Length: 64
Image (cartoon, rainbow, N blue to C red; front, side, top):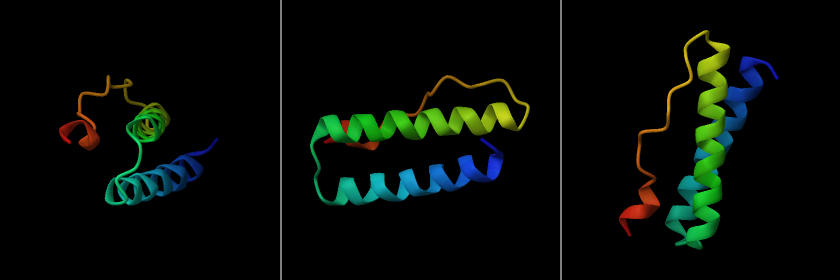
């Protein structure tokens, strides 16, 4: 997977996650979507030559 592919996938996932939040989707679905977003953020971090960062941000759906 190249960087462009990972960026496109991440952008799509973030958009879908926002839609799911606005639709008040099931918490389990949101958790899976958030995990995928974190995975692709890590892939991009690694592709850019940086050390992978542990996801420190809290998923927005946990504030409900």
